Length: 335
Image 1 (tube, rainbow, N blue to C red):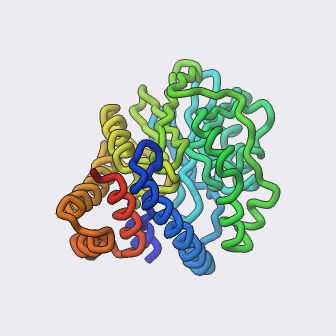
Image 2 (spheres, rainbow, N blue to C red):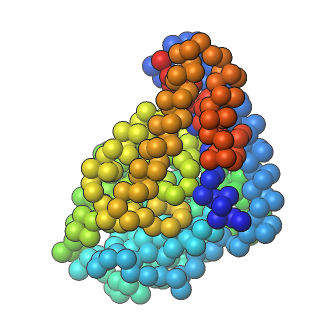
Image 3 (cartoon, rainbow, N blue to C red):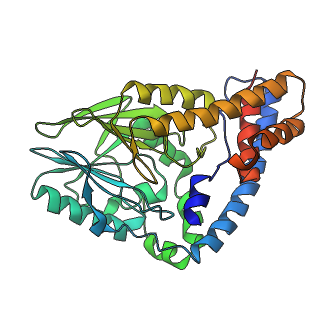
């Protein structure tokens, strides 16, 4: 049952309030209020779900190799658990994401030591949400944490607010997040960062405001493996930043597809062969954008547009409240 819920989960879309007319800024203030109300609903639903879902523990015994130099610990589609990545070079190891809180982070670190021995460690997170980032403090000081400046800004703006929401959802979440905090970056970059692991080069790219303000992808070109974070998954897109936009996300998907990955490791859910996860996300977001824009152009009100586009999606989008949020965001972006 959870797999079906997860595969169709929808999140509210947010778009930037910069460089848009005052009337649309007024709309966005209203929309943001709706989003906050919805967060409370989602938090309640997540609390109920947490009572029957497995604990958000990274299962390190699931470690498997997906290419000559890349290993992952799959999330097994457990809520609040990310896919963990390891890229092993001749001289160093890169770890991708940490799990929820220091306890998970410590387990992820132990696997890195097992794979790399005494090799230096680098750590990057695909974005700053608690299950991806708040285990970093369990890594030793010798580990070099790499962040984009967008991530640094995202932490400065949002702080631990989401962590507090996560902690309130269950006793195990609260235990895992006890005393968790963001670790300061050892290395920062603006757009791209090339990392030499010894006989293997990895590129980190700051993708701008998609799922969050600070989404970062990891491209292992030699193995054609892409760690896409939340930018491309089997789940429906989750717009989690006030600056997120369909327009920018679609451009990001084009950029990912141009890499021609053989394997995509998403933030959550099963890995994908080729570009299937990208095309799936593009199809969904394009349809929301185009249907919404057509209704707005025809003079339909926001409420009428939500009703029409929701009806058009039918059973393909079972969570109507979350679909409505995406439509409202697309309505604000439409000309």
